[in-house]
Length: 398
Image: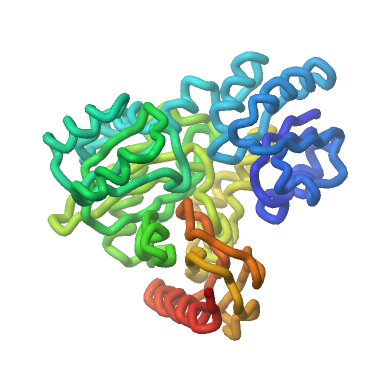
């Protein structure tokens, strides 16, 4: 079985040749230059600069089909969802088609589906020119959030609090269309899960620490899995089950939804994607539950499904969370790369002394990343804060 893989993740996150070793030894991979070197033993491998927007990827995929007649497309990254949908549709392959993929990518379209589920939808407006921003401010007032209509990782997402912020925003080169939303003041949760044979077999909520726009204030972004007895756990699970039921959800997929919980006890929709949550969401789930949802998803696309009964007996063994430390402005002159805590189960450092930074551009930009273990969400939160304080104390910019 020949399989085309579209990839924009490190090999350690998605070792396809290991996951699929009993299914195929004829894997074809198109990936970004950044990650190419670690993918070995593939039937065909090619890398591309600026992978996310490089349309040569699509051309090469078509040419490779003419040569190899691959039978499936695996695409686990946000930016590849639409590509893969178009390819499957064009080539008559099984899996998520473009019509489904665009609902999970276009933030205006997804709101129309989300409204059917019963969650609240923030006021919003598609922005085609600067006057649309002014009109929306007349309707919603400050603050508002403006984002790309099909973005990811909070890239180019801006919170506008006042007229000065508005002037700074309009002074930039803007690429329309955009989406403006009223700012929802509340706790932000992400709910991650797995759909197999059209059934939601796993769903679990986590809570953000500081939120996805924290990087704009040089604050770290954290996340932790909720305890089973947290009152929000069952409530968020049910809300997202209904949400997924209202969407044109693929037969086999992971999903990553985000909701706000406000002080007046309302749930507001943020967004949902038909892919695994980014950064270390999968690692946290694997540590707590013993399942790798990305691996299961990839295998299911090739017709290899696990016993669904196993998911009905699944229980949370531990809890886990992660924290990303964004770069500050300046030159990094000191950084300790060995956290002295046995409860740090994974640590990564994405910077070198002597490197100069101008701050983070996306929520996932970081100089260091830690995944922590704990017996409860309270302990995990304490440990996230502790390792973040430790790293800050060991790091110097000039």
